[in-house]
Image (cartoon, rainbow, N blue to C red):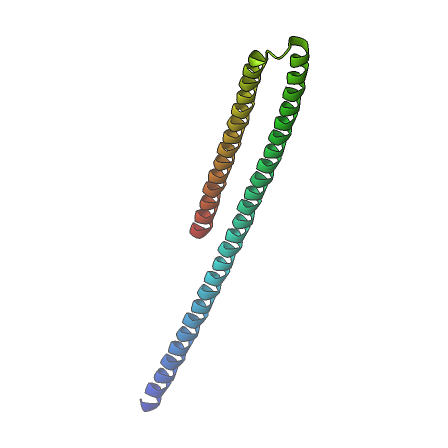
Length: 146
């Protein structure tokens, strides 16, 4: 009977050791899975950050190009205005108030047009940023829940 108790005790000891090894193995697998998931989320966040930076840079370049185009239009307008004033003065002996008024209206239209375009570009950029941020959030939530 004493030998039987010892066999049962040894068997129970082996079962307990095996269960502990299984528990430790499962814990390591779970920790490894968490680390892999964290790395995936970090890589996704980095990818999203680069995408957002790219969008910001594109917007900056487009704004610069738009401003450069506006400056060129303004320079062309000023040169045309100067020539018109010279031509008008030569043809009409100095009565330029009507021409100045017309040029002021044209300049104001040019400024308004540029500002409208700039506001539209900025609104489109904000929409893209918000859409991208929303898509990134959904992707992160999907990955975290999956």
